[in-house]
Length: 103
Image (cartoon, rainbow, N blue to C red; front, side, top):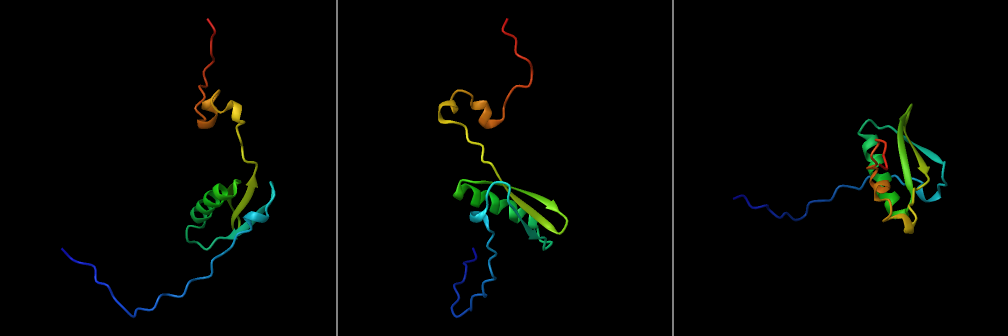
């Protein structure tokens, strides 16, 4: 079995500048453009949208557009407390599309 060797005196790489997106300054309907660096920009933006959205209690959507990825703030759909257990299929989107007969 190969043991992992502990090394001393190895310099850490310089951190790259972290891009700060203006999520906290956005109102519903606002957007910003992330330049497409060609390195999975859409994947990176969507992951950050989800993480930051959960943290801030907001919802964001991203679309590929000319020049990059555009991010919009959306209205976060909230199911009122009294209805959370009444219609659980609304939360999962698991609504039966067939017509229902009362007979």
